[in-house]
Length: 336
Image (cartoon, rainbow, N blue to C red; front, top):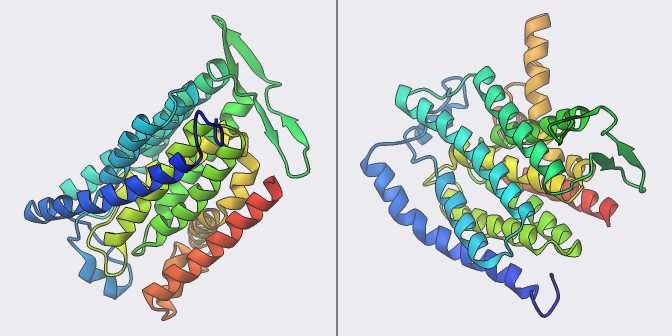
């Protein structure tokens, strides 16, 4: 238990510190190897012109983030079904991202898996995740709103062979897992943007898990925070490495997984407000262009719109960090 003599809270901070140092060190030979093998990022042809200089920058750094966070967590965290399921959500979305990255690098273009292929993968992940959450971890198919109101999403539950299938709650979980995985992925478009915003969000989730005496999830979040900080050392502008879809999809998956396991789903929608805004900006852009032939933004996701308006990349990143932190503080305040 966090704060008890059996599991001192200081170990959560130690997990973050170790992950930060190890990730920062491990990325040095990783970057060197990726450069030697000429495995690099494919930049969008319609993006800001100054992004063309990023073409070929080593990518898939998310592999290092996930590997370090996983090892640190398995060494330091109590082993529980909750932890296993959170790791499942993180690694399976990361694996889906890896397929996307490999497809992109292999074909030398910025597009990887098709949207339908991603949705099939995310649907399968969500079905397994929800069934295990409800039937093994004992997660109630309910959602809690600020103020204490609870809505039961288990009203359409059926049982097959003793396995409870909460259809409505499964759909909600899918929207959360698929939504945040893709939203963080869309946010990962500028040096340090995704890693910085995820660091703030998962720091809050580590605190929330700690207050719920879920040391397993608190350590996992802390290890991911530390790994993201170590990654930022190399990812700050000008970036020496990108996390790729491997990292962004996995971090979004971890964010949603912990939200479900700590029963903070609605609060996560507030804490992840920046990610949602980035995703919604893409939806608005696509719908507007297909229906009217006009674009609402100079370029989507939203961070590129401000780049097109002439904001330096560092200014966009830092200001988005601030906005993200404000959403996280608001969501955490409503929870506590």
